Length: 398
View 1 (tube, rainbow, N blue to C red):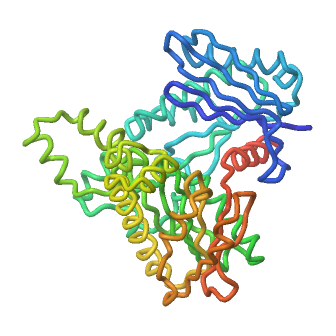
View 2: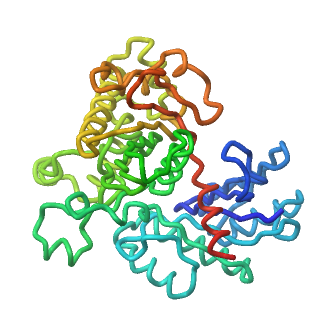
View 3: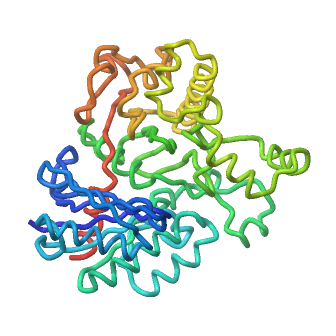
């Protein structure tokens, strides 16, 4: 079995999977795990393989130590580089700027180019680079491939990609809409084409990636024409801890009137806003319990979330003109029955009809939740970014 090691390196964690690129989306990976609390006094590595879970707790100084410990644990249980036929390593890279529209085989030059993009993603790209450098050192004889979150949105038309600010200033500082979750939106949109048994080029669709981070995309004929996230992942929908779209004047107001620093405002909008900022929790399961107990803050947070989601769905229906499908994916989108129902409630006049019984079925794989006579089909499609990254990596490595 030829496997691809997929790495998603964060600032203090590394998610990893060993994936068979030929597997079905609903199949479990050959092995998966998580390195947590890098740089803290106590760290942990978790590995899942062959139906069993294994853990090691130890101080993890940096990404190099964390990945080495993960490989040691994998080798111990027969699924590491010493045992598995790893044909490529796929790396999730958050920001590709305007430089990268497609996955790239990683070279020293590519690493330097990704490093140059750090000002656009200061919280993400440094960790992605750490993961790349460590993995290349540990597995030097295997091709490494970078897959960019922003790549799918690279071809958006200028009217959607550019902001209405002074053109010279924007160009000099890389200010434009880049979009994120691109690997997920692209993967899900291709799966929808299969479900409709139509070529992607014949389909107009709206994809809704609703997790703790959330974004939506308008896709015409397989090409993204708009997306909710912007230059950073802060824009767009209300999210777990992020505000989504706000009046930019609020930032100036908080700086001038509240005496908040730029870093404090950054923390506020990214970490203490969204559903959590309004209700105190960002887990929708907890939010639902609070709503059931008539918590007014939770009810308000939910309604603001749904209101913003419906605004984007409506605007993308107009942008596309004709819509074949609307698809929910990611943790909230795949599992929250009420979010799906409320996001598309009372839209029968627009050709959207949800079947309550289909919508209530458990998340077991791609499925239609609209009625048979719904003009616009509605789907739930579990996303699998790791499988998409693995397929890209294997394709480029061959």
